Image (cartoon, rainbow, N blue to C red; front, side, top):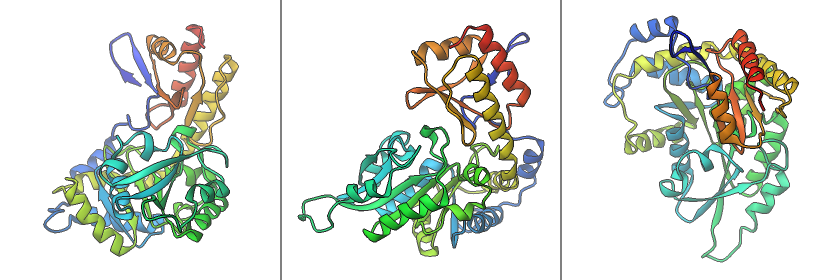
Length: 346
């Protein structure tokens, strides 16, 4: 809970990015060995990059200050002007990165329906969207498929390995590269009981975030081949992401990596919240991970009413989104449900 006054405590479900570093993480940050990560390599950053690459099953990884930059770096390397890329509808690279994929990476996006399940298209839908590879010279070339696991706007939906493999195979048969936005791939791995590397098999690049649910104040990685990461390092510098003694942040990310198994508790709390909302008459979706989506008649009015009860949430994909995280306890979930019931929601 976040204390706003002596009498009011807010229960914050807006995102799993609102978490604050705890004392263990702050101690790690304070004692981190650091160096200039532009001129040379910060030793703590090197440790994080090597460990993250191994966990993600990739040859190499590069630290970035944000997941948005990690995705932009990957798309900038994979795309050329005149290229088209495919992504599931409401993907983060389409809706939440201010058009940088088109503006800076130079790719024309095309959104695909979630006809294969929440957050993912069918392989045949991908194949149809790719179309012919022998069109006229003035036609867009489809060269990249972007997947998102878990898919934020689909309620933290998970792509199982066998479906990932089918989508990857379809892309590969048409000569496409594949980037995985794995901002919450840790959640997908925990939900499936698999190592994260099992969910990145065959991709050309993957991004992963340490500030979503794991408690770090900042930091992501983008991973791929060693050649890809060398190119990514240059692109990061071009985008202003070259930073100096950032071992203080990488140290927090290392602590965060140790906490991936803890995410199972957030999934339990999400189910607890969704069950409670349905008992109160909400049409809450059944969560696969730590995100609960609930359709309401008027989102703005509902969010305002929730806030009046000391419960914070955000809109997402035409629904109210509640995100569970380490700074909201099971007792907080019960208290939120009590307040929602008292407020007469929905």
